[in-house]
Image (cartoon, rainbow, N blue to C red; front, side, top):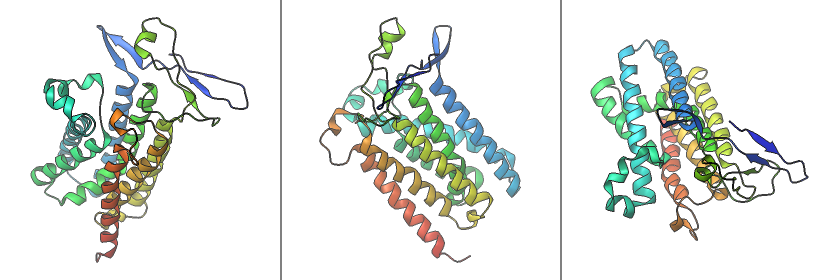
Length: 281
């Protein structure tokens, strides 16, 4: 894998030449994105194991939680991308919705998918209030989100506007042709927004972990979940100001689709956090 070359000028930047493919098996590519996704869920599961041991909860419920979370994340993220960003195309070509391997996942849709799957999980498996589940699941989710953004970095995708910042990245714009031997065509030095979001999400992960393990805030039902929503989608709202539009229809919008979708999640986060602090106990 090619790593990065550094330009040695006052306005230096990183020329990012990472290959998105980790290796190939039987003609099918295994990508860094998939590895990052898997690592995120594996680490998240180990953290949840510690939480389950701490609260002496049935291990079988944790195994079910993993299944519900993975299915909810993938289905929600895929449907979210199709319906939020290109509804006309996908509703006219519904078979294309199934082609997850071609890319196209939306974090807002993934969040909604997990919420729906947790509702079913709470009713059918844990028999706990849904906010009880959200508070615990929120703890490792920031780490999972950070790993996914690192996967986006390896894919040379979802980066930002042109900038003269010393930490700017140049990304390969003709990945397909480059992988087939063509010379790379680089973007102008741009904001590495994948890294911005990775940093915010890791801070969110650290905060939620501290709230659960050190402060015992899981006793305040909905508080950890509320803080998670505020931090993740609040930071997403801010980073979108320097991120390139994902779809052409966003051009000229005062707030892009990612920001518009983040607002209700942030508002819900404030409501859950405030509500939990006002509750007795």
